[in-house]
Amino acid sequence: MIVTDLGEEGKRADALGKLGLSYGVGMVIGPFLGGLVTKYSRYRDGLKSKVLVVKYWCFSYEYLTS
Image 1 (cartoon, rainbow, N blue to C red):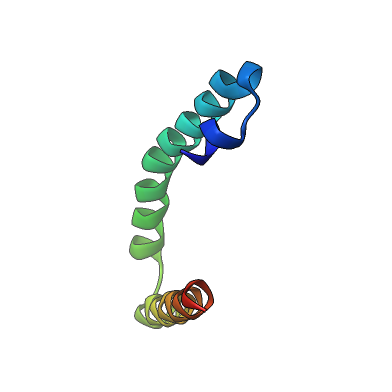
Image 2 (cartoon, one colour; image 1 turned 90 degrees about the horizontal axis):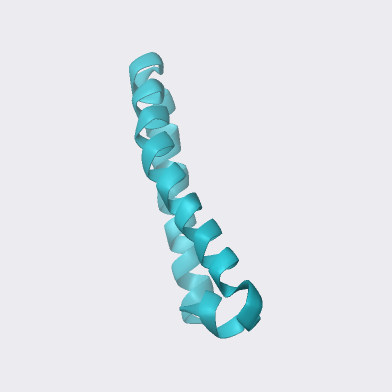
């Protein structure tokens, strides 16, 4: 893991704890927010967000492979 390779020896446990916390919070809040968005948004809003995600994926692929 990058956290263990780049972090100072004394701060590794703190960094790994924060990383685990961020994953845990994301797994709880992400589906909740996704449910709210899909429940209270219109069809076109969802379509726009899907187009933005696909554009982001394409940009990321181009950036990471170059």
